[in-house]
Every structure is written in structure tokens, then in C-alpha cells.
Amino acid sequence: MANTAIPIQLAYAETYNGMVIPFITLRHADGTPEFGQIDHNRVAECITGRLCQLCAQPLTDAAVLMARPMDFGYGYVPEPAQHPECAAYAIKACPMLSGRLPRLRDRTRPQRRRCTLSAACWCGEPPAPPSVEAIVRSGRPATPWYSVRFPMAEYEVTMTARKGPRGISLHALTHRKIRLVSWGDPDKADLGRVIVYGLPMPEAGSGS
Ligand SMILES: [Zn+2]
Ligand SMILES: [Zn+2]
Image (cartoon, rainbow, N blue to C red; front, side):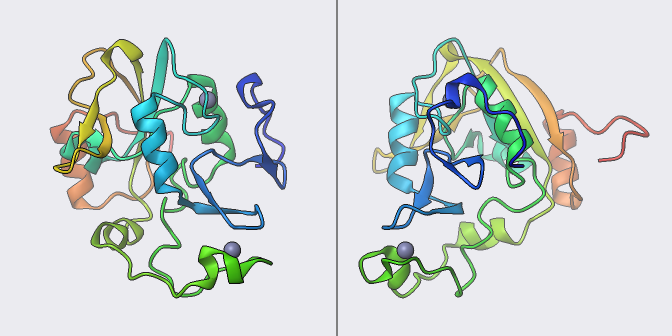
């Protein structure tokens, strides 16, 4: 958490309570971050611009994606990649990325924090109904999480029908290195995906 060492890439990143604020984290009008909610414009900017979701700097040699078993089924990850050093920091510092909390935990809840500028901020607006995907994801707090390291030469954006960036392709990665970050408490569907896609499982006796 706050005592996790910050890597050099993140030396100039904004922090909040000692934790780096990821570039893609949604901010209130008064500047406070809403951890767990993402700024969709910044997500699109990172995916198309080949930028790191944490420090917003260009990705060069190698990058890391954080993926769940269901992402391997879809064939892409709907969030930007990270520098390997930034990913290592996020795994240590951010409970959402290490799978202890769902990534989009606030999106189906009507109550939320209001900032000091709520009259001019999105938090003063009535909440939008959650998307189907947000509901599906928020109901799955214990899914396994994997880190997928790959060479940037294999970076490929998956597009939507409207030619917007949907995510980063997992199919295009032929030299990917997959590691288990957090096993959680997978249901039968996730266990099936782990087997079908040949994903790593916890070693016997290591717990999760
Ligand atoms: Zn606000
Ligand atoms: Zn970075």
C-alpha cells in the first residue's frame, strides 16, 4: 500500500495518500481520484497511443497486460498495457489489480463520494445505469488475475465496429509470458477457462 516503493518511471506521477494515481483513474473536478473508476477517454488515448496506463509514458521494448480468464476467451484485454516496472508496482500497491477487489467495484452502486466541486463535477450528476459488462464484472470479485508480458512488436489494438479502440489483442501475442498474480476463488466457468486456455494454476501448497 502506501509503503510500497515507487519505481523511477513513476517518480513524477501524482500521488494520493502515498499511492500513485494511475493516469487512467477518473478524477473529480477538485482533483481527487476515484480509485476503481476509469476515465474512458484516457483509456482510449493510452490504447491507441501505446502509452502506459499508470505513468502515461510511451511503451517501448516490453509491456504487461493484466488479464482475467474471461479476457482470454474474448481475445483481448479492455485496458491499456503498462511498463513492466509500473505493473510490478501496481501489483504490489493496488488491491484491485492483485484481484482482492473487483476492478469496477463502484459502478453498480448508487451511492458514491461527492467532492467539494460536485456542482461542476460528474459526481453531482445522477448516476448512469450500469452497463451489463459492469454488472457482470462487479459480481465477480474473486476471479483469477494474470500478468501477460509481451514484446511491443506484437502490440495490436482490437477495434470496435465503430472503429474505436476496444482493447489490446491477446491473440496477436505469440511470445507472451503469463504469470499468475492472484488466484482468488474461481467459479466453475473460470476453472474451465483456465484449463482450456492453459493458464497457470497455483502450485500445490502455495495457497492463493
Ligand atoms: Zn466530484
Ligand atoms: Zn509506466
